[in-house]
Length: 207
Image (cartoon, rainbow, N blue to C red; front, side):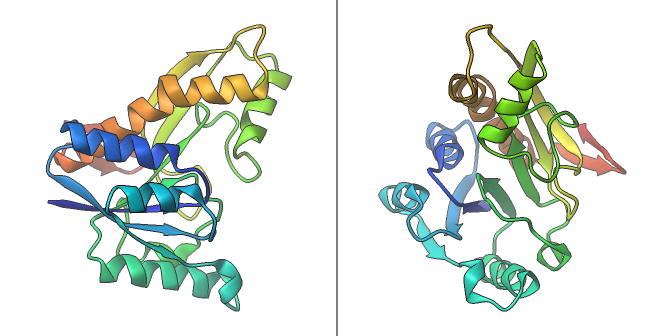
């Protein structure tokens, strides 16, 4: 049984996509064991409760520095014996201390085709605003393993989404979630659960 921990800050739509994929069997032999939010009022905590998943709030404001915050998150995940950590709209940058013992065991979904519109400062609606400002005709989403360098870990899956002439940031965000994020994130977790992902340098090999 793959034990999954999910880090969230907001509504948790990608958390819900993972929970739904486990419920339907798309992700086999897996369970979300713990949801951790750095925001007390995150709706993702309600999603966890409604699905019978344990949750906790660990706020960076409770610690002297980011390294202590990282270690607190890591301790909670290790205590729950988590095999795979998923970032699902987690609005905090994780430092090197977090990844001790979790190398290539942390995934994130980013709402653009990395390396475009990625890195520090590119999150939420800001990504889609930048896509529209540059006149791109295609955008999408990327699932990658997470490293201390923001949005720079090995890519697992990507899916393209058309940018329409009448899009604004909100409509584009919604379509990228529906057509890409909610599809490829569960797919990537399924591949991990099936033992089909191998990292060679900066490449992810899918067997």
